[in-house]
Image 1 (cartoon, protein in one colour):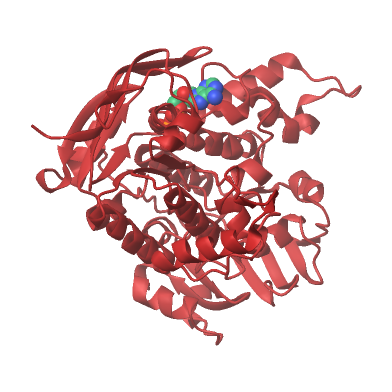
Image 2: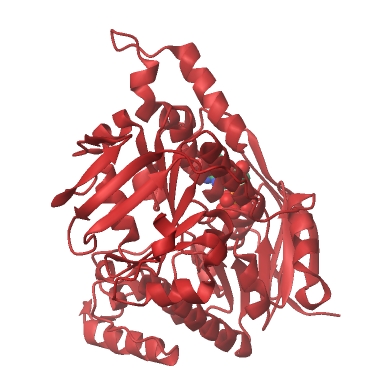
Amino acid sequence: MEKYIVELEHITKSFPGVLALNDVAFNLKAGEVLALLGENGAGKSTLMKILSGVYEKDSGSIKIFGKEIDDMNPKKAQELGVAIIHQELNMCAHLTVAQNIFLGREKIHSGVLAAKKMNMEAKKILDNLNINIDPETIVGDLPVSKQQMVEIAKALSINAKILIMDEPTSALTSKEINDLFVIIKKLRSEGCGIVYISHRLEELEHIVDRVTILRDGEYITSMDLQETTLAKIISHMVGREIKEKFPRVDCERGEKIFEVRNLNAGKMVRDINIDLYAGEIVGIAGLMGAGRTETTRAIFGIDPKESGEIILDGKSVKVEKPIDAIKLGIVLAPEDRKKDGLCTKLSIRDNISLPNLDVLCNKLGVVNKKKEKDMTKKAVDDLRIKLPNSEVDAGSLSGGNQQKVVIGKWLVRNSRVVIFDEPTRGIDVAAKVEIYNLMNELKQQGIGVLFVSSEMPEVLGISDRIIVMCDGRITGELRTEEATQDEILQYATSFEKKVDNGANA
Ligand SMILES: Nc1ncnc2c1ncn2[C@@H]1O[C@H](COP(=O)(O)OP(=O)(O)OP(=O)(O)O)[C@@H](O)[C@H]1O
């Protein structure tokens, strides 16, 4: 019989109005990488939070290394060797790497902090993982990818034998993903059991041994990756087959809607020129740090522009603040939903109505409740946002459903140009298709769609034209039918301006 290091049985957990997990079973072996899969809101994070003591189960049993644990809490989980790296990183940005690694377990010598000792030990752990980070660096100064590595080091410093990673690659570049995979393989060979949660199904074949699938809070199945196919996995996750991963609609290219002329804003937005026509989707590709997000922020008026012009429907317009952009119908769904896209402590209704108060209020500034209710319902229905009711805090939704709220609030107003920055980050395979369909609908309605994405298949699958950025500049522009991944990558790593003349014809 297989020896499991984790055995969860009959786990049930509800939140007000939601049965998040219903009689779920789960197990994990030593030395395996198990992918925990399911659509947004399926219950993956909740199950792993129960295993790591963050949430208390309503009922069911937890066995770790064969021993039943009834009163699991984060401290106990840590003592048992369970470590979790959450979807949204939980580091103290103002502390150093070593201080974060030893947070709550500081080494003390003669009543004072043994900083030197902690730095040395942190260095040893980082070296052991081939992670090149100085333990005295302030965590907030590190890029997200490196912070992720520090989280792993922290997990290992407690001798984790059961390591849970919730969407670890969503903010990493492909090189960093490879580095992470090397670390995961090393941990696996040392006997660590790893639970890997990801919506990037193409990653599975590189590191995963087995998959467990949840749907709507229920256990569906577990199988060895070797014995199944991606199509089967998706149909178990979604409950149906997904025919087209990148649905495309063909539209005639219409009038020029939007122009960005010679835009400069800080170091990462240099001389940007973009044309956007009705009936097309323009993708902005590039590596992490190429200046794509900064460009969208400058266009939307979050960051000040040094020079340049924005032209909407042939007229030069002033966008100095986001409210100017919103009033003109130029809207942005930002990359970091928790920080910039949502008020997590406000209800979904509030989040949707906040940027639309100009439409919802009468002359006296009083919100028309019926209009507000209809608007919320439309956003929830159009995007199939999974929620108990629209009065719950936006922060209580699963990651993917939060992302849908961010997008939904813009789609209920008459926008002229919609800019999406990494719209499908953390979004499940079926919801991705819904978002692509939405972009296609906007395209058919003659609305300009600009979208930044680090996922090459998505850029190639959905855009009509691709702009490539590198080091704050546009280095290439391609028609999608002629573009290849290699070509995009070449532009993404080149510092010379090369524009395909045919693209703007
Ligand atoms: N703290 C909470 N309060 C209320 N409801 C919650 C809370 N945490 C999770 N839920 C609900 O429980 C359900 C399962 O959410 P969970 O985050 O576990 O899903 P998930 O499978 O991890 O999704 P995703 O892939 O989008 O991260 C969802 O309906 C979610 O809204």
